[in-house]
Image (cartoon, rainbow, N blue to C red; front, side, top):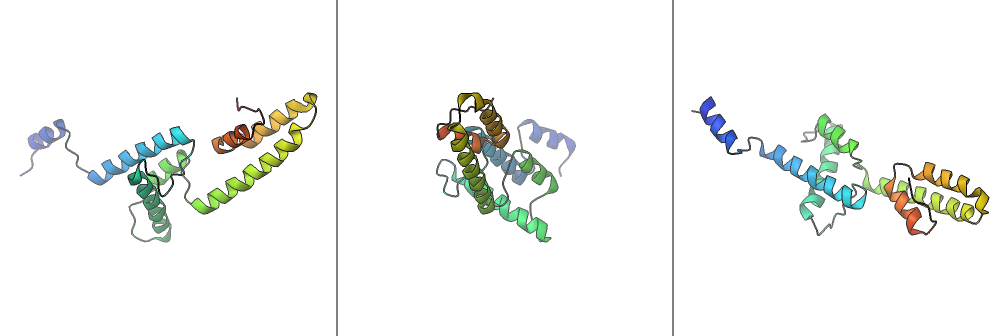
Amino acid sequence: SMNQERIDILENIGFIWHSHEAVWKERLKDLLDFKKENGCCLVPSNYSSNPQLATWVKCQRRQYKLYWEGAPSNMTEERIIILEKIGFEWELRSSYYLKKIKVDKVEKQSELLATESYSEYGIFKDLIHDLTEDDTFLQESVKFKGYGYTHP
């Protein structure tokens, strides 16, 4: 039978008691690495660098939906909080669509303001800062389009 001495021996050699939780944490680390590299948690479904991560992300969205429908799910409130804290997007299509609209708005305003005189550049800079604050996707878009603005 399993006694405390055997439990201690197994724990000392790194035995994993809850393998599903260990895998979840490993994929979460992969997602954090992806975010560090790409600035977002939008892992492509065909992400060849880490197909396990792509599958895991898709699974998290499916489990989240089941959770809110009251169906059996591996999703927990704790996992939802963790994923939301790092910027995980539950609704992929709508998220992309909303970001696209926001980028288009920033680009149009950027183009208009970029043509104004240098004395008004401060206003342009403040506007872009407000629109792109906490949004790496927009910051990169503004930088890529060559508006010369770099988020502080």
